[in-house]
Length: 160
Image 1 (cartoon, helix red, strand yellow):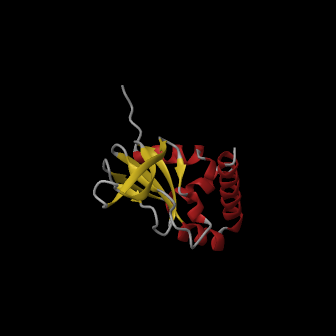
Image 2 (image 1 turned 120 degrees about the vertical axis):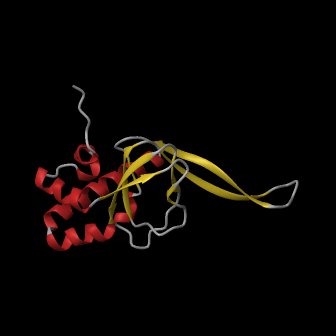
Image 3 (image 1 turned 180 degrees about the horizontal axis):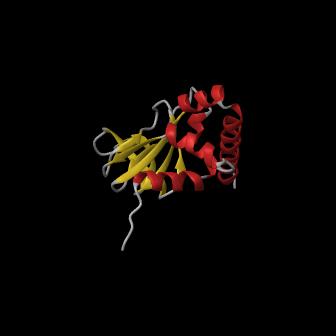
């Protein structure tokens, strides 16, 4: 008989394997799971757009998400202002994006995130992290240390 994972099981599995939550106990992972939000996105629907205030981090539970940026330019033939889109990265199941918004209240999104196919995305928002800071500082320090490692790794990759 074929068994199917529920969204809850899938979310728990993805959270437990994500570097943002590395080193957390099963009880701590349960706290994170209870504070996280799951949302479905249709093809072409934006999760967030460049220039918006960042609210939190996201993990792809199913589907694919594209990170893109846009530049404005003047069309030489018409003189009209147009947008040019550039794909930065394509993300699949288990991949994390938007994590810098967990630490920076003034963070403006530098790229847009858009579903490339029907996608389920987990959101973990800064206000939820701040609640953890107040109520469970040990757990919060683990998550924030993981954020710093992730951001340092991304910075190192960009500087290569």
